[in-house]
Length: 154
Length: 154
DNA sequence: CTCCTCCGCTTGCAACTGCTAGCACCCGGG
DNA sequence: CCCGGGTGCTAGCAGTTGCAAGCGGAGGAG
Image (cartoon, rainbow over all chains, first blue to last red; front, side):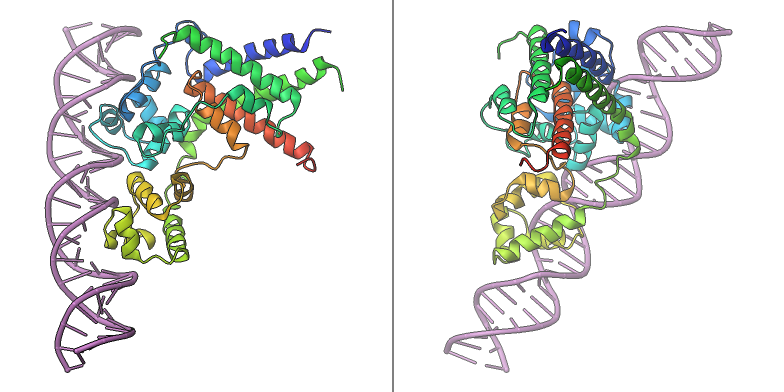
């Protein structure tokens, strides 16, 4: 019998490859992860960063988000200020949370502080211990990947 | 307790299906996108409820929210669909959180899990947006599982 | 070389937001 | 009676969003 950690690590590998499929790219996403590091000042820049990080064309994102391609182009370049509905659609198309986009757009207050994610998961009584283990292992793997791809310390 | 291997293997299955669902939803989002369109009339009702509950006149709220009174009137009756900025202003005038209003407007999804854990993952800048999405999706699946299997424990 | 497809962008236009000005109504005091 | 001030709502106007149509350019197949 192997240790639970080994199995979990296996699983992390499986998840990671699947996630790469989600991102629309191959396993390279992790290796040569693009520069999502720079903090964008406007929503448009942020959207464009996320889009190019996912290797998605403007038209493709526009289609999957349900907006026209010219309009998305203008939004990304800051020429238009998208409504919240459009913003939510774009967030869905990018598969990121709408809240993040709203924060970028300045219509939602940025969450203050940096609560310890690990502590939050550990103390969450809506999770079993095994589920906590899976989440924590996956979380730490993601953090390692992120640090490797974006070492720029703020 | 069963053997660790069995449990972890169970979870591998769960994780896979969850991540597959995440991947699939990227494509599906296109088809079932329009969930935001008709909901905006409820936000007006909600605003009017909150306002009359606070015994505040329309003009007064309009002034404290920084919008014109006719426009607020139209918003409350569902004749106009306010932008997110206006919505945030109204939320400030009503002294309620913008998130609540956004949920009423249908431009923010209601979250099921422990807010602390969700907030921790969301605000963790050591994660990419896509990784956040996967972790949150997985987390919510676990929470649902937990509630289904042990509802009395809460 | 021609044709085709994809990329992102510019151009006008319908539709909408959010405003100012003004309407009708109700109340308490001169 | 006629004010002045309160309630909410209607009319009409800039300014904006979001779109369809079309542009020039970069590749690939014939």
